[in-house]
Image 1 (cartoon, rainbow, N blue to C red):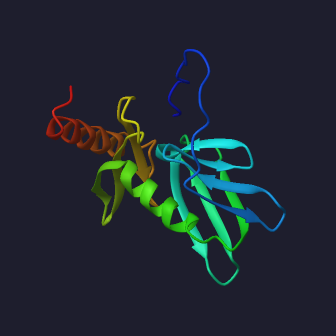
Image 2 (cartoon, one colour):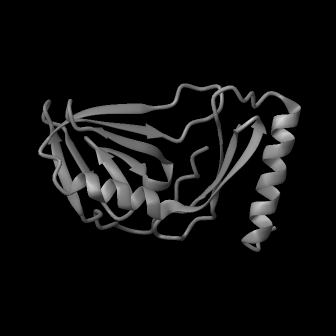
Length: 160
């Protein structure tokens, strides 16, 4: 569910790093206004599902937004002195979330309908379903509930 690449005209100035850290293997991990950079790989903030810091092991686990049925990309990064990078990651992920709604389907478990936006705001909202444990997205009732919640969320935001 990645948005299409945006064409650029002429030369583009590299994005300014707002915070960075090195891994124990010497890889550079940095954050810009628009993306998380992991040793040259660019992951737009709206494509970062979660980032969890294990203080005991000093490991950052970054999960990318995935596609149902496919392996979700996860990066485990042993960071040396993460400093401000952890704060930036939390701020940028939180800022990308426009709306998040939980819809119970099986008892308390259900689906989250999430709208995410690129920090630049120059792309349409990206809508994501996140199914909780024990909820089968192949079940037609589950998908009906998810689609109804999506339609309601879009209507509340004034979107077709």
